[in-house]
Length: 173
Image (cartoon, rainbow, N blue to C red; front, side, top):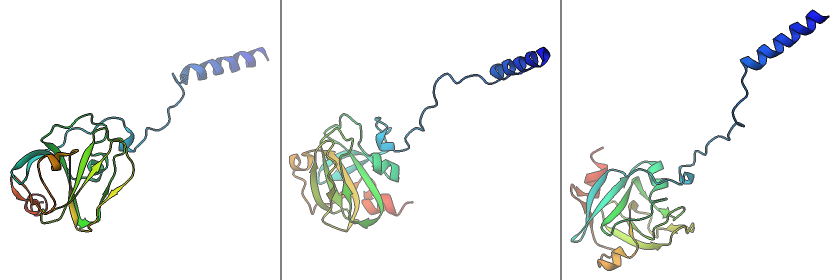
């Protein structure tokens, strides 16, 4: 009986040494929602965009994740910078300011590059800003008030250093 007890104790000790206790309780799985990271996305590739005589250096958001995160968590945007969102087909669009800290103008643009409408958006406001048009294929975000300060109005053409928005983003895939 004594040998059996010693044998059981030896087996128990071996198990305890062979299976170390975790240093801490297991952590919950990390959130896969990129909008909740608390970190801005890395700077995206840029292109020069013109609205009338005004040139903007714009980051290009093409993928669904780039669209979803956009300007979230960024703390500033220079006066002559922006972000352009490229969509595969024209449709009605709706943007919001979830986790966005900088006041922005959101401009909805037709496939031919015509500026359709501009909406002022307040930081962290999660109320959607839907487009009136169902012809929106591009969206341009700038510092709030940029369009008014530069006298850029609906009906004006938006183009890039490479030509029309269609030629730049849709025909050269």
